[in-house]
Image (cartoon, rainbow over all chains, first blue to last red; front, side):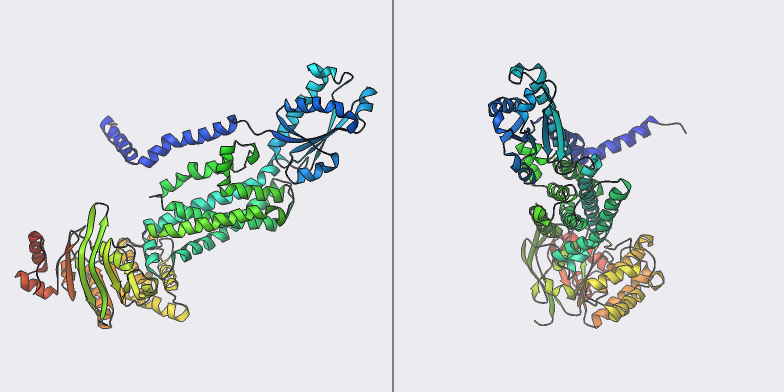
Length: 372
Length: 246
């Protein structure tokens, strides 16, 4: 039988008609890329907040201070003058990203025509900030020594000062994968648990089992808790697999307690089940549940601190990021795995995750009613 | 009245501009097989869903065992068979029954006995190990019924329980319904099959959310002067008015 244009057209028309009537899919098809691209463009274009640098110059070099500060600011660095002995504490407390410590014998070395050794301490847990600091300081040193009009200030500078870099966290052992691993661990758990709980709950609706459950003595809260418990087992196994794979196969370097990693994951799982059930109330079928990915999942990847740390984002984006559970999970896991910090450092994040869990559970329990 | 299981008063349910139930009032005594008949969209399922608590009425009242429909304390006393099959297709026949038994708090030997009972009633004992997805529509319907009556509820709400069930098994179902009613169970059954309707103690015929008639099948035939329920309902439907009950 030869192909008939009419038959092919009839089928094409059916497909067109189907999409024309599914307004949500159409909106997603046309608007979601714009939404995600705007987010991305805004993130890339918005001036990242300046890197916070502590500067310590020996008191003998006080006359140089103004010039040095100005040259650093010209590189977009936010400069605070500090005492050398405070550098470590300020970095640990997260008040600085890096500290530039000029040696006590700066003037003598310069006078002797030597190459001064300048110490750079990096907080180190954010590779993108490390890179930023290095790039800006390289430019700063270059300007200082060679081609800038300020060369009159340091006239005797024979060569680029030697920069001796120390990482407070991270450092040479930490490959890019090591920095990304904490984010991966929580992201995969969030993503799969969210999607699977949304889809399984949709099935309860489409097959009518939710009606039986709602008529039974099961309370709405019990339904949500039962779901969470069921997913917990598999998601915990999944997170163990991801962790072990990252450590033993990908060879990531990590510090801190794996139990804390598990505790964070535990809360991520619970909040994801709650969010999945809640949002499944707004989908009529599995396709529509999958459509939550560009709206719910992708912004959390972009804004959650996966690639860019929160502090480098424009304030408006930071606000959005703070309303997302992934942000706190990634912060907590980075603190544990990259910085080796403990419960004392991550309790605010744990509290935030607990808050999201409770909120999503309540919303889920309320939405279960709607589903009959 | 102590013997009254269901009381519906001036029950109205709107879905947007559509009035699904219109000031419906009725009472159902214990041990009754109460049939809900009427064309598609007449409000049968809406009424059943309000009685189960799945839907809230726009106005009016529905009480079961003297308590507002949907109250958690009376849910154990109710069994519900939804129009959608309401089964877990990835579980076996037996696992479905065990799950719903657990939901109703049946454990151990009790659970085993009830499961066997329900399996034999719907003649699925031989298929206990089959997954839901392997069952035909009729077999799923049987399993669905088994899940609804597993915990021996005092009130059974069955939304078109015999759709897709062959005549022989339908006969078995009705024998079981009659036996249960004899034991004091109250059954509310919506159906399209009028030969089934004739087996009900009382019938409510709905149209456009209104109660056209509420009587025993015999009295309906008598008052309309028709030979069959089918003709009686066609006639009542055409007249489209409430029939005063003598």
